[in-house]
Image (cartoon, rainbow, N blue to C red; front, side):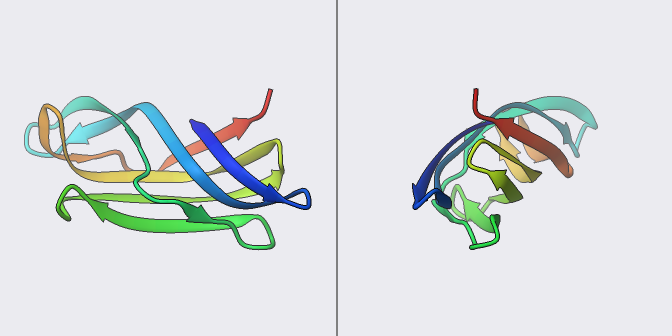
Length: 105
């Protein structure tokens, strides 16, 4: 995960970039395995308690991205990601629910 965020008075207010790379997905038609790499297509607002959730359809409504998470502080966050729909090499991929975490170095 690679996240770019905006803070105000030391509190995270939104994610301007949420990028993920090589997330394993199952191709439903053939049950083969593929990998998904992309960037969440929208800015994500963060609630005052540090939580966030967003579900969007992209690629003409064919791909669904769902992300949720929570910031423990400005330097670490964790949550869940799911991508469903056509990806290169697979017309109907599904990552399932993928747990993720990110820390600022």
